Structures are given as structure tokens and as C-alpha cells.
Length: 116
Length: 113
Image (cartoon, rainbow over all chains, first blue to last red; front, top):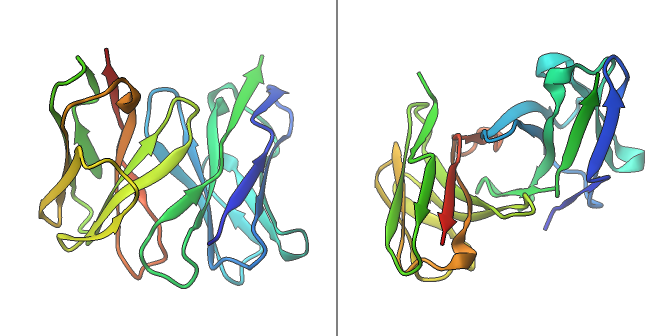
């Protein structure tokens, strides 16, 4: 089964600073990878999605993620943090490789705090 | 024009009660899910239905029973609620064979007292 690991349960940055949220996937290259964002007391919103072949994926709200096979990573970045980016971020991968069941394995989440 | 909507958003109830959460999606998807988010924010799938057929049933107590009257609706009924059932329950949907992109509802915050 596929899985992801998010390094760092809490990340704090100043407004305007670079945001870097880390995600590593298990050994086999997944066909898809996702980043979701959860604002306080809200549901999960899709930020961006990786599909096989892409390396740099652009998402909403200025976020992007780079797929690096050599590092088994799919880190999420944003050049300049905004106060409104404060939220919980989840990396996710289809749990069943080659399956269309749609079961996602979520990382433990990273809480992003943005200081003024 | 909410894509995946679920009700109620907040639910506070006593132990031993039975409660239901309803979910509807207007995306035309053929697959719907229930995910549970625990107090540490860990998300785990509970059930999935494809065209009204149960296709994923994780290790969930029998007190939890999903029902899908049609492919746009998936309800979750919980019998004999326990303190440990307190969590956020997310409904979601996707189109099978379309890249596993899953769209989530706003969540239902269940508190059992």
C-alpha cells in the first residue's frame, strides 16, 4: 500500500516569507499525489494534484509543488506567505496503487502559522 | 451551488443516542465516501460507494451504517453513540477512473457527551 509522510507537524513563518511544507511518498512512484488545505472549521479543499509526467505542479492561491523522484518527495511551496494561508495542509496519495477505488492515504498534516 | 454538502455541520448528542448525517453531491460523480478525522486531525476512510454499491468498508464498528439511496446521496447512521465517536466526519465524492481526485464536503463536527 502507498503512504506519505509529512515532516513537521507545525511550521511557522512570517508574512512575506517562503513557505515550505514537506511530504515524502513511499518507495514506488505513485500515479497521483495531492495537497489539500483545511482552514479552521472547514472542509478539505484541493490545492493541487500531481499526475505522472509532471514535475512542477501549480495550484491555487499561489502554491506549487515539485515532484522529485530521486528524493521521493512532493514538497509544497509558496514564495510569499500571507496571513490567509494559515491552515492545516495535508499531503495524500491513492492508497491502492493501480486501483480506481479512490481510497486516499493522508499524511498527518502540517499546521501552518503565519506571523504578521 | 455547493458541490458536496452535508448536514448537520455541528451535532452534540448524548451517549447511547442514534444519529444520522446526510450528504449530497451535485458534481455528477459516481463514487462517494465517508472519511473520519480524529482529534489529532488524522483522516481515514470509512466507507465508499460506487453507483450505490459498497466498495470499501474499512474496519468500522457495526454501529456505523452507510446508506446510498442513489449515487448523489450517501448518508451515515450511527447507533448507540460512544464518547470515542466524537470526531469530524467528511463526506466526499469522485468520478471513478478519473484520476482519484476526491472532493470533500465541509464536515460534520460530532461531539458525544
